[in-house]
Length: 412
Image (tube, rainbow, N blue to C red; front, side):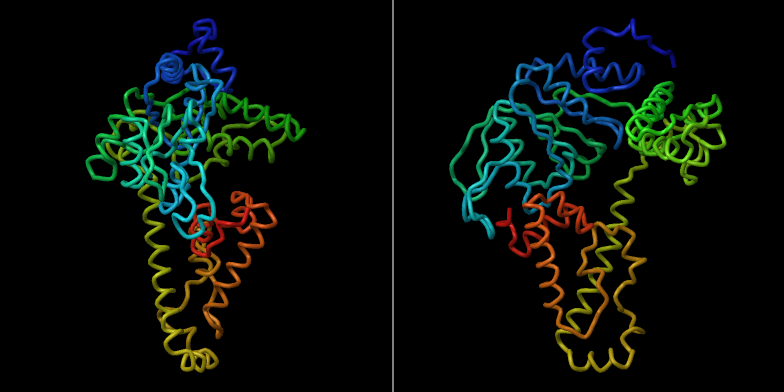
């Protein structure tokens, strides 16, 4: 693949790259930046496609910055991180009393960003009901808050992104066809890192230099062998994975030159070197990490069903079970609670109540302790849910569900 020199890049593209820290001269990457700048002044919906970790989040920022809306609000929303039961409220707002815990009216993102740009990341994760609401906003600029009958107007530009094959999602009935065409008036495709050739070397050097400067450690350098190794690797996690690997090297090999053998030792062994010719094979194209995630979720849900069944048995026969527990019989039951090493397949999706071993005490006390732990953490962190999730070591999705389940929405 030919390397494009800086002198051959247009001033606008250079400006966008410098402003948003985009590294690379790959023609497909530069074309994506060029398309974002070109469409920015025209109020059309844009759909950005590309693999997870490829850097899709830069392009809605470019579109907003080069548009007439640049002085208005820009709001980024991760649709996959918001529970299905609350996403309509988050996007469109709600009225006081519209559901349990709605102690006051609340503006949604479409109202907050009125006049500006809203970026819907992981848009394919939206529930079908929310997709219908979004379609109405795109067609008429109208929406209705949850619990309200009053139609409101918004003047907003929607930029969406996804790592899902949208044509396949439409064919499988997981995404509305009419919404897909509305969102994808203009499409921008972000190339995966494995197809960017020399950009891998540029990014690796940049990440290494940034690490050395931030943590005041001796900088590392890359031999020709290391460069070849990095460029031949598949990088399923794209730029995000490259940054992670380089920072590990920068920490443990500080001040040294990275050889090909050393570079190989830091690359996950489950992924062999990448054959560029295989990138066009059906097997590579059909591989998605959504399938792996779905398998893990199914396993966790199966484990949780068994735990729920055991809880029901405890509630129906507490005295008998207490005797069996004291006799050590329960530990040999087929439906014994899963051990932590099984639950830890995806710990952030398993709540403390799910992973706790059975004990001869009422189930309600476990729920009460969990509710109190979440309530106290919310108070300590002044209602900042991201901080609460990090403190309790659970995902934000699980935290949102638990807050709603325990009626803790009022704590701020």
